[in-house]
Image (cartoon, rainbow, N blue to C red):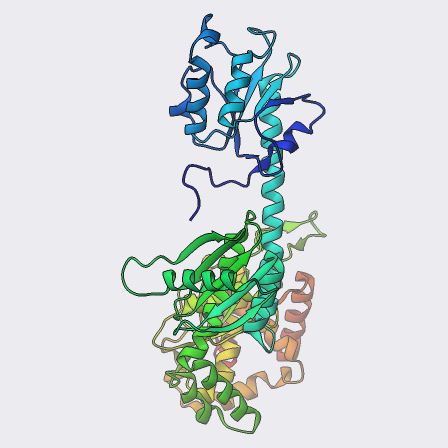
Length: 508
């Protein structure tokens, strides 16, 4: 587990700070090397700074607290020992305005307690040192985020390969520069990747895996250990499997990268444990071999009635309610779906309560059992169909797509296809469909006109929102609506005409 005395920030080597020529810092005592890191810079003139340190700091002092007779007693030993006890990483001593040189007794105390001592010249203010530390920490944080992001993308791509579990282990071993192993529920090693360590290290990792294996309340979900110069980590999967990692070093971001792999492996091994993955494969094979939706649906678990959900990631740059440009040449701001990654799509499916997802395009499609009503999800815009049996899933897919288009245009987190009784309940289905075919017949050869008219009516005649929903220019919407009115010989400003057309369009 992480050391609770060290702030959870990516550290920077003390050597990187010493290398800054503009600061002219010089280490004059204590150990040196790339393993010495700092997490922050703190200035204090307290004789006992212990209560004010979190650990990992470069403590800066001008020696104001030092008494005149300090060199002849134990003052410096006591002072340095308290810094070390608090977890201080290094001590910086300013040569002005109190002291012209660093006290010899302080140098000896730092050498004795193994605390790096840095001389700060008079022309370098402590604020400049603190700012340099902040800049180095920001750079380290950015590098960590970039490394984690790249690792997440590569792990997600590995999970989509035909051999997902071995691929994820190989990618994790490559990203962390070590060896990875997956242990089954019985404790046996079922897969591994990377350069295999010596037998004692492998045995130690297998023992660590047993520490996190679920055995009742209080079992840790992760654990770390070190042996023979190798860092070991084990992560439990809710499916009973355990992920083990052995690396030569422990880098910032390693825990986050391993956690991403843990999520993916949980999903992959969960399918193996529950058999749902095999059931979905069987359903796909049957469809490819000519099976009907009614025959296949029972294999998908609770397959009597389904919601079809279409979802797109929210793009903070999209402003569907605003126009860019000047009057007369205005254009709707773009609102194209933000492409989701596999992890995001999988997380959405899990939140909706279904593993049946398709994220191959810019839109994520999810098949949700009707006993789980979809709810709004942060960061997503959802369009939801009416509950549908297997033979009407194609129609439900169309309903979800139309609902999503309206949701995007109106900036609504979730819109469902209207399912409450309407005029259609008062008219026999065959007569309603015949009336719709006759009324919309002039548009039958122009699918784009039909869809534009449907969207325009559903958005109460808004040109801009219709343009956003269809991802076209609003002038295109005006032209299509005008052409529809011409072909239908109808006055579309008449509410009675709109109502009749909407009734007809609902029959499709």
